[in-house]
Length: 71
Image: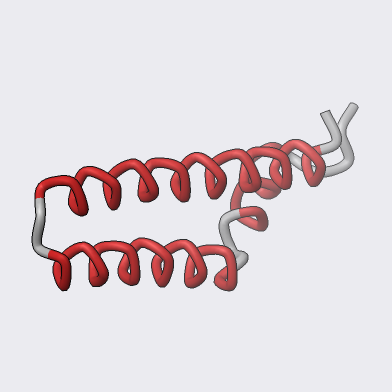
């Protein structure tokens, strides 16, 4: 049986404010650059980079959650 509940592990995995801040800063900077370039291609590229940032954030958070929950 796990020593820590999944809910407690999720709460702890989501409490990493540095990961959230870095992801948000990355998204803001990419869309800031896209707004300076002001082209459809720049916004499309920003959306792709934003999706990549979100996926990295999601995977890192999920891995941390699984590690903390000790499934």
